[in-house]
Image 1 (tube, rainbow, N blue to C red):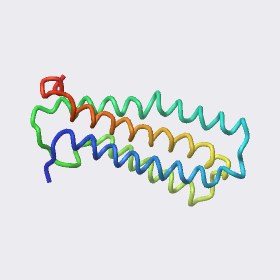
Image 2: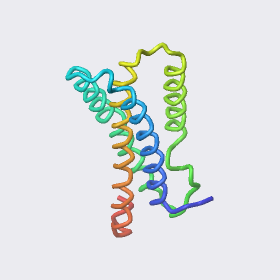
Image 3: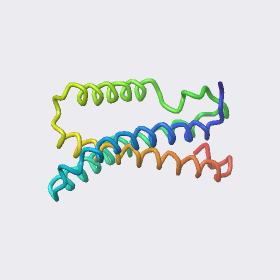
Length: 144
């Protein structure tokens, strides 16, 4: 199934927002028993690190790649490249494995998942913003 380039950004928005919301929900579910100033600061640090060094760059990279496509219509899974899908699969497998195994204490799940989930959710929102910008931008600007 082929979709417009801008729709690829919408798919990225929906996928990352859903993933971020779910991870954030898991972290916040465990958080009430571990609320402290220290843990909130650690969650904010996790959020900041992932936003600056991982997901912020990921949004920019994939938005630029999608905008640079010369053709208007593409296979619907091209919202990410192969490397991004592999990273996503590794993160999902690792996260599920960590929770199911019980190796990570609840305080880690609360702090780390809240920061990570919030960062993922923001990445989804940023993809959505870029989708909106692409819809509103004239065709000549979209390819820059």
